[in-house]
Amino acid sequence: MSKKILPPLHALAQLASRLPFEPAAFGHPFALVGGSVRDAVLERVRTPLDFDLVTPGPALAQAKTLAKRLGVGYAVLDAHYEIARIVFPDGTTVDVARQQGKELIDDLARRDYAINAMAYDPAAGMLIDPFGGADDLAAGRLRMVSEANLAEDPLRLLRAYRQAAQLDFAIEPATRATIVRLAPLLAQVSAERVRDELIYLLKSAHGADWLLAAHRDGLLAPWLPELAAMESIGPTGLHHLPLVEHTFEVIRQVDTVATELAPLLGDALVRVPGGGRSVEVLVKLAALLHDVAKPETRRLDPQTGRLIGFPGHELRGAEIAEAVMERLKFSREEGRWVVALVRHHLRPGFLAANFPPGDRALYRLFRDLGPMLPALAVLALADRRATRGPQVPPEAFERAEALSRLLLERWGRPDDPMAHLRPLVDGNLLMRTLDLAPGPQVGRLLALLHEAQAVGEVTTREDALALARRLVSLPEKVEEENDAGGAYSSLR
Image (tube, rainbow, N blue to C red; front, side):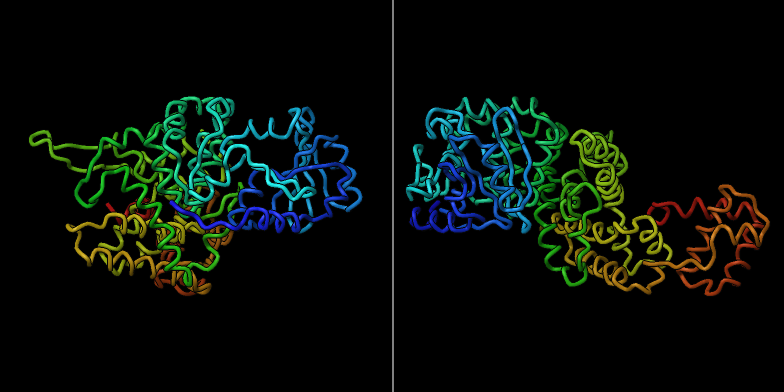
């Protein structure tokens, strides 16, 4: 692989000019190191800017003095190793670390990959590249500085796949072989750090490819052992790909679907429900886990041994997804979203099979998913597209496309009673009018009244109360209709 790079000194002089302070104002010699140097040589500008400085002087004192002089934020990240962060109003950060070795090269020798083990001395205008990082950038490869460095912090193993995805690089064969051999060490890393690397991969343009490579190389086994069981299922029925390949193809298709449906989605995928991750990332997590229960729900014909199906895999999958989200320390709200998407991922497909869907089935989908509806529409369509193969009728995808667009179009209308119901009655009014005591009966009545309103059977408060009176006089009807109104009633 060949990469076009700028002459390093020219690129690095530009990087130094972007520092949010004059180098002389720091008060001690320093060098720019790590990712900012790498990205500058690649002419890759990240926003906001993120600088790493190494100084042989007193790092904490100098960083604090500089921050105070500039009137910006300052925080100590590691008192023992003297690492501090200066934060500027535009989001630019400058991490200042004290040099640990006698020479700067000693510090660079402790880094993970050669492309990250370069430094630039702005005072001397000199690139310091003891391990050939610039050559690796030109060749588009990731090459370790040493095996010991990777073993010292095993997260660096997974980081290679993330950086390969972000930079569109290859991992040098000897380095990759070392990573595979050291992969079990990832079990020692904290869940939070592994989680964040997985998120970086899911957000990268080539992330699905490298996440699959990380799985196949054994890096995900300590944290996502469920993926290994999925390898036992090859192409089956509708899915023309083996299950694992299908899963990662769904992740790829999320980006394609999100781009095509962008006018209907608005900001639905960039929202952050809670925990710091966007809805789009949560959709990709749900894509990773949506078929995770197929190995244990697989059913075979006892006579022929042929596959019958995977009954209930979405329900069991939701349970597994909940455990995975807890294992990786996602927030409770993020877990709730992913679990719901996995649990309901089949529903749009069932509705598409009978397109156009009935009003009640459509309303129940809106009711059960709430703000997650756009995310489900994207996941379901990505899933359908990932099934494409010569045995799948084209019309099956036409219906799926039409269903997703229908859902998003109705979701985008704030006055649509199906998607954004404004109830005619509430529980207090029901209890007062019908002399009901608080309890489950009130909730069941409200569910039936809201559904009747959504499908146009009642249009006024008086209509709703009249229907409520009739239903109260037939309590068995309330129970029957409530049972029929469950999340999967229209799909059974």
